[in-house]
Length: 163
Image 1 (cartoon, rainbow, N blue to C red):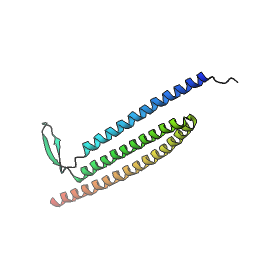
Image 2 (cartoon, one colour):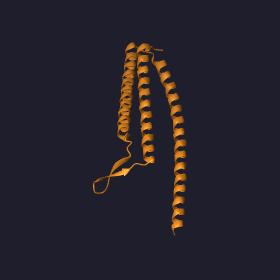
Image 3 (cartoon, rainbow, N blue to C red):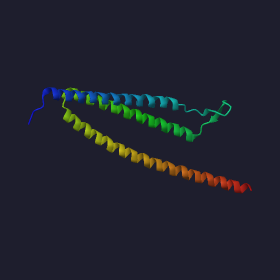
Image 4 (tube, rainbow, N blue to C red):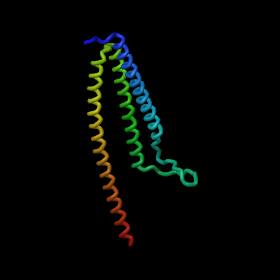
């Protein structure tokens, strides 16, 4: 069996590290974009005022009272964006840790195993979060349906009493 030459090994390592660098740069760009987008959306949604300007057909704006539901929805969106920012920051910290580990150890096999185990853990966590979101969505849908039934029933009753 012929042993690989050092130039072949070096070329393979260079290709691996250039691909790794490209991948890490993409991750960095994506996480920073996520941070800025979430921050921009939080600032945009932070107007918890008693009224809001809504444009109408004549391009005039009119003041409309914001109800509690709209304020709660805005608060929920801000919480989601803040959670996205936290996740992006955690990913950036993980990226920094991976880079430090690569620099210190320069052991690609161990790093690949660590990356694979971290990926599996994150996938499991993602599935758990998706399941929780589905449960919350079902609960919100059920609550909205119940509210519509109650409001619809009270409007019918009040309509019948005036007849």
